[in-house]
Image 1 (cartoon, rainbow, N blue to C red):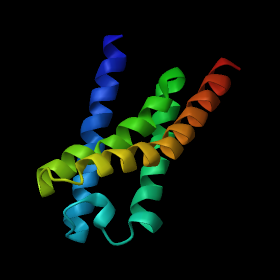
Image 2: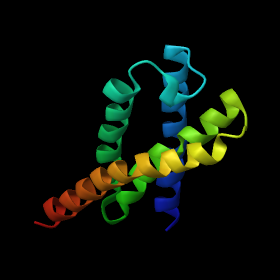
Image 3: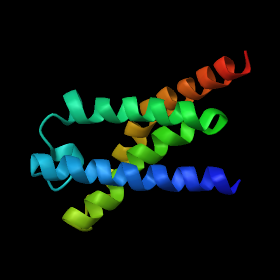
Length: 116
């Protein structure tokens, strides 16, 4: 239990650093305001979700959720709170669905390949 919690916390911190790097590299206050978000940064986050999901196995779906929602503290730190925070949360919920699916599938693949 404790090892899993430490993995999830490490994933949260690494994901937050990833999204902050995106903001720094593209000079955008929020990750989804960055150039190439849909063509580069979000697809990379999906790949990261797959890798993390593979290592989390049965809890792999959490990887996609954590990676996607780790954009929130980055946005909060860089842009502050405002009237669009609720819309941003809704948008993150939508973005988390494909990421959770990818990481879930990767976790299932890991469970099948490690038991065979």
